[in-house]
Amino acid sequence: MTAWPDVRTGFGFDVHAFGNEGPVILGGTEIPHEKGLVGHSDADAVAHAIIDALLGAAGLGDIGEHFPETDDAYAGAYSLGLLSETCRKIRAEGWDIANADVTVICQRPRLGERKAEMRGNLATTLQIPSARVNVKATTTEKMGFMGRGEGLGACALVTLTRPA
Figure 1 (cartoon, one colour):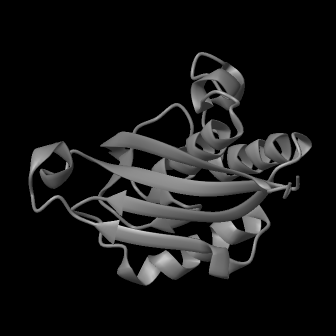
Figure 2: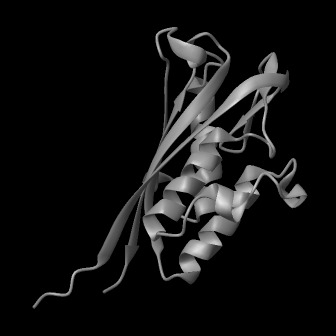
């Protein structure tokens, strides 16, 4: 019988409303914008979506269980730091991160020229080659709360592997 490696896929989703002073932080990148995002931490929806995807793939719950917004220790936290801590937990369980793919959903700010920087920040934090990280952006064609510019969202998909 062939021993197959253990492969898991996880999905994460996060949204934050605009309301604070800018900038917006996504994937650890500061993006100039007239309004920042509201959140207990730095409101980095990209990092939060990837954290949930990683935890889900490993069967370790969700971001709220590991970094609860009721814990003042995480007030204003740098989300790439939380992502780094999540990676440590994932690797302690014997998992390798094979890839991460994230989509940011917003009308504004425009992210085209910032995606490469986000990709680099995420690859460094995940400790994987940047070729294994992808960052995309899309709009909602002005529909819904994201289309009206009230907030933004991010979806992430990750693959974990563990040798057989």
